[in-house]
Amino acid sequence: MLNASLVDIPRPFIDSISSLVESLGVACLALEHPLRANTYALITDHQHRGLGLIRDNPINENTIHNIVGQCSRIPNAHSIVLVSVRTVSPIQCGDVEMLHHCAMVTNNAGLQLLDWVVIGRGGLYCPRSIAGMPDPWPSASAFL
Image 1: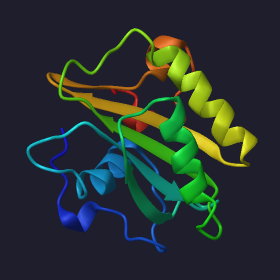
Image 2 (image 1 turned 90 degrees about the vertical axis):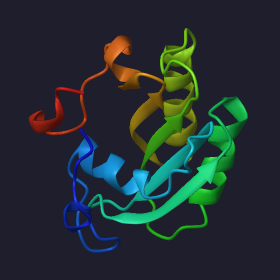
Image 3 (image 1 turned 90 degrees about the horizontal axis):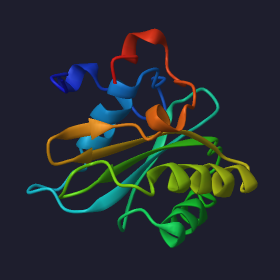
């Protein structure tokens, strides 16, 4: 699934990130191996060009505040894509509530939560898919 070459990965400050696969390609450059429970935030400008990549603790109500605080120090930050890594099954029962909380916190800070992807044992998923939220990406990545 993530078989993109480095040539396919959007360049920071230059190329727009226009799909979930592209945002995962960027975030996967920072993943630790073996995988550890962390949350990565890909920060983009209003044209969805990458501005920064932050690694923080596993997602919870405090982590999103830390991430937003770090985003506030990045000029022209407009939106973020969260990528959470779990060492267990990717789906947890509180994910829909956490998605709504993260969207509220980022919105209150003047940022847009573009998407949240959870990578875990056995695969990945987007909590928006069970929350009934629309896909923010073009139809090319609708299979995720």
